[in-house]
Length: 92
Image (cartoon, rainbow, N blue to C red; front, side):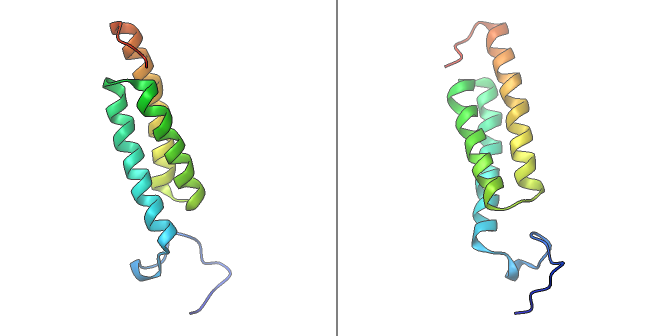
């Protein structure tokens, strides 16, 4: 293997991706799905853990998907709480 100093994470071929990067991608996808689900059903119960999963995924590997998972989770948190308060549904 050739390790260059200017090689960054996420720009290699599929064969060069590490297991941590693959797992972080799956965790980020799961966090995005659960965040969208949490907008309409128990925002605090679903979105807070999905934000924690997104943060763990961003700590495992840095990439656009991990950043998107954290940002989408934050937006879904605000939207979910606002929608729950506006409609009178339970937050928890």
